[in-house]
Every structure is written in structure tokens, then in C-alpha cells.
Length: 505
Image (cartoon, rainbow, N blue to C red; front, side, top):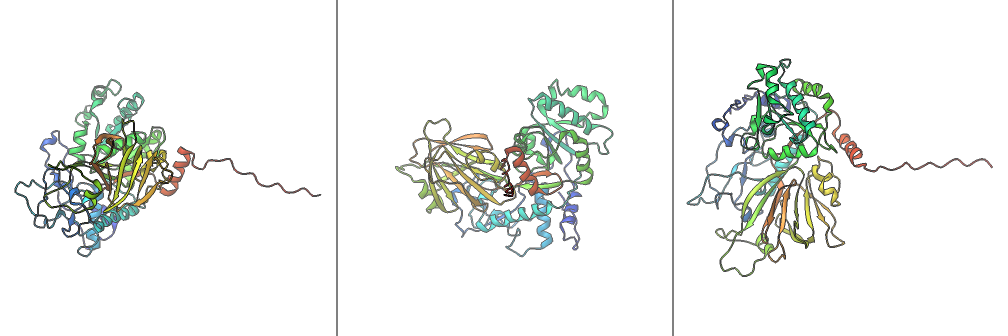
């Protein structure tokens, strides 16, 4: 992907956005296996340089999925990304001309100092849990600064391909999906949009794709279907996403787009609606304004959760999780290896699962052992997720723009465990001690429920892929307060009566 041309005078964010909008985009092809867009063009949006002398991150948490050691390479040139959020970050970095080893400029996608193994595989995706304290802080600061600037601007995108997500089992919502699909495909639109709906709707009688295509021959080839594999492998295919449903539908959009997330505009057709800000009855006016005049985007912090499995050792009699995660280890004797990674918008929960007894859970922050919890579980929530499971577990309500991590115990067997709020520059590790009576279970945004055996743990850190949520114009802070008052009846109480004046005696 060619880098957008930029003059020396183009040092403001508005011109950075303009350069981004004019960037070339991948062609929409029928066969995605033949797509010319390489993984490296969008998978690694930020680059991170690792200092081999800095032991702030555990080596056992630094193993790639396919190679025991990362490869030492010569410095490579920075590649462009199809993610509009990270393209803006890159343009901001270039515009400010940050000094070397400062800001976002000290970020590279390889680790210096690691020796190359004989059977070393190609570089795997790097994760925020691998960053040093300064690098993680610089990354989160850059995203926050960009989010503040985007909050006062209209981001005008060139939309060609529109992704529509709805509840495929809800007949009312399927009817709404057909209505909005027909409107987007209509010749009355100035742009011949390509509309993607879920593949399960292709044979749905309520959606009636065949009848929709008979209305106009020009619809043929512009009505396409998506599946989870397409969203995972080619997220750059979509320019704009529309969600029809409630907050759960928005969470599913976040789950589908694990890395690159197109701007998501959500119509309120669910129960609560913390993330759904638009009325479907006004969808024509809303979408027309969004496509022609631009949108305001709020970047929601997401967490990166990685499952780390304990490596078996021959001849071991007794192992201590605290010692393994805090103490030193030999280069060729790693204690744990990563299994899979998920980016989540609401929370990571480690609980007792189907076990009848409570869980024993160790909590670590960076290189410190925080505490051991005897409880039904632990909920680690984003600010966006503060109104979900975190709220039910007794955690604090938190404005979504706060750069924090919320930790709450679920039915702790103690009177003194209070919910805590940590900075988003900490890498948390939630583990099951080797001497635990039972295993625990981890879930990510209520999905991908997996068992954590004694010795396993989950790392949780701020993700470098935020969720781009389209917001209505106005004051975002006021909108959030109104939403918790409307949906949760926050501080709802009958007003106290005033004193009546004493009657003259």
C-alpha cells in the first residue's frame, strides 16, 4: 500500500486525516484467497522495540506462538497499515517528528538482543504484553491523545463497502436489515455501495435475498456475504460497519474484528444501549449525514488477553507459580508458553466455572505479586465494561475515556477485598496456583470459555487495537451520564421537600 503524499506544512491532524482518506484501498474481490493485501500491511499497526536488558516483562510471557525464541533482525522500514486508527497515529508521529527513542518513534516489530534459534519460525504477531513500561505508556498515551482530537472533529471517510451486523435469529431485526440493505443498494444513492450481510441470511426467507436482487439487476454483485473467517483474515475489506441490535451486538462486532476495526455506527434496537447511540427510525438521515458530512469517532480502550499454559518439566516435584512469575528463569528453560490471544471490549473473567468450590486465584501486576484471592472469580474490566459484569460484581462505574483497568472480585470469601482501579500501563496476570484444589475457567467478553489448569494464567494489558465507535455530535461526557441515568436509573430518587415557612404567630 503506497504511503499518502504529505507536504512539510501538513502538520495538523486535519491534514493527516485528509491524507488518510485519500489513501489507496484494496480492491473488493470475489476471491479473497487471491487478495494482494499482505498480512504485514495491516496486522502490525504499531512497531515495538524490545530492550533485551530490560527484564520488566517476564521472558516466559514473551514466547511466540510458533517459535520458542524471537528472531533478531536488522531494522526494517515501517509499513503502512489498513487500519485508519493506526494510520492516524502514524501520521501524527511523522507530523510531530518525535525524537528518536521517544513518543511513538521507538516502536519496532522485533525484539533486539534475542538470539536466532536454529528452527526459528517467521515473526509472529507482537502483543502489548511484550512491551516495556515506557513503550506501553507511550502507546496508550498516543491512542488517548488521538481519541481526544477525534472527539472534536468530523472524520470524513470514503465509504464503498458497508458491513451490516444484526441478530440473525431475530425476525424483526432481519426485516430491518433487509430494509437498510435495499436503501443502500438503491440507485438513489450517489455511491454504488457494496453491502455485506451475514452469510446465514442468504437463504433466510425473511431476508429474501433473491427477491431483493429481482428488484433491480444492478444489485447483482453488490450484495455480498460475510463470515467470521472473512472478518478475521481480511478486515480491511470493509470501510464502515452498521450494527442493528443492542450492546451485545456491538460486542460481537468487536469480537469479529480482533485487530482492525472499521468505524461502527450502532442503531439502538436492544435492551439497554450504552453503546448504541442512534435511533433506527432516522437511519436514512443518520447514514446520509455520516457518509456525506463525516462522523465523530470515539476510540474505546480494549484489552488484550493471552492464555499462558504451564510447560511440563521432567522430574519436577513441587512448583510455585509466584516464584515462576516473579523469580528469574534460564533462557532455555521457559516456564510457560502462550496459547491464544483475544482483544476484548468489556471484560476478562476468571471464575470457578462448573466447580462446586470457590477458586484460588493469584493476581500479579507487572513484576509484583498483588494478592491471592479466594472467591468465585475475578473480573478485569475496561472502562467501557464497567457497566456490565463489573457492575454486577460491585465494581465502580467508570467513564469510558478513563485510562484505567478495573479489578473486582466475584463473591470474595473475605470482608476486606474492595474493587481496585489500576492504570492501563500495567500488565496484569491472573493465574491458578499449582496447589489449587480445582481448575478455573476464563472467558473473554463472555465468549471462548477455556479451562485454566493449575499453573496456567492469563495476561491482560491494554490493546493496541482500540474499538472505533461512531458517536453523535455533542458532549460525550454528558451523553455517558445520561446513558447511565436512563438505563440504570443512576441516583434516581424522589427529591427532598423543602421546609415550609413558619406561619406568623
